[in-house]
Every structure is written in C-alpha cells, then in structure tokens.
Image 1 (spheres, rainbow, N blue to C red):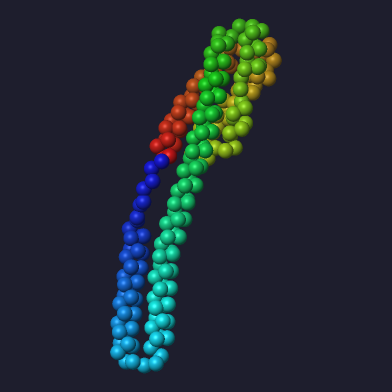
Image 2 (cartoon, rainbow, N blue to C red):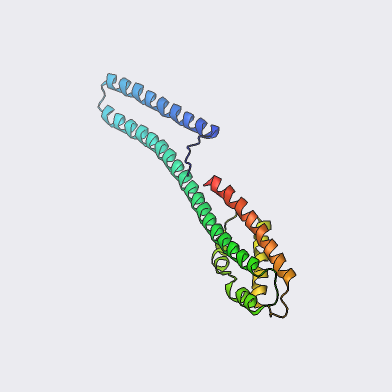
Length: 197
C-alpha cells in the first residue's frame, strides 16, 4: 500500500493562516505581559494568567483541529483501501470459479449428449463463490461488467438444471465464450484495483 501525505494548496493556506494567527497572538500576549509587568499593579498576575490561558486555548484548538482533520483523512483513506482489498479478494474468488467452470465447459466440447458429459455439467459447474461474494463487490465494478458476470452465471444455472435432451453444443460453446469475455474483464479490473491498493 502506498501512503502519501498530500497537502493541498487550500490546506497549506489554512495552515499558514493558523500559524500566523498563533504567532501574532503570542507576540501580542508577550508584549502585553511585558507592559503589565512594568506597571506593577496588583491585578497583573491574574491578567497574565488569563492571557496565558486564552493563548494556550487558541493554540491548543488549532493543533487539535489539525490533528483531527489529519486523522479523519487517514481513516477515510484506510477505509477506502479496505474496501478495495475486499473487492479485489472477491473478484479473484469469482474469477477462479469462472476459470474452473470454463475448464468444465471445455471438457464437454464437443458436446455429444453423453451421460458422462451431462453428469459433469450437472455436478461440477459451480456458482457458490458468486452467491457468497456478489453482494460484497464494491463500486469499482461497472454495471456492464456486473451484467456480464450475472449473464454468465445465469447461463451456468440453466446448464446445470437443463434437461439433458435440451442441451446442445451451441449453447455450451456460447457459455464458454462468455466465460472467456468475463475472465478478460475481471483480469482488467483486478489490474486496475491492484494499482490503487
């Protein structure tokens, strides 16, 4: 993960203004304290203490604001990074399952309505990772990519549950081709997410 501290121009101006205000306040307080000490009045100790409290409160407030805004920014970046990692892991699991299904589809092509091929399609085609991970995919997945994946898994569900008399080689080959397209899209997506992590 790449952590960079980016200070924008706006933040730099705010920091500069806060620093100038704090220095000006310290200068005014110091001059005021020196003048009060010179006057030798009985209420000077109380006034000096009050000015010190005010100056300390303002400086403490500025520092607390800077630290709090930095912490909020870091927390937001960490949360975004965690979402990306979670999405990346889920996409990899789904891609692995699609790759497994692709191998099964290629194993039954050319389809000859054979009992062994039908058993392989009914028992070995998988959609468990899709069911487990689909709700955890983040906004990094475009609607088009999501529709492609959904379309592929609908075809898998149909193949698994289709009566063997209705299965044909054309449908299986189109499902295989769709799996290849989906895998290409997921590969591009994982590459893009990996750059952001």
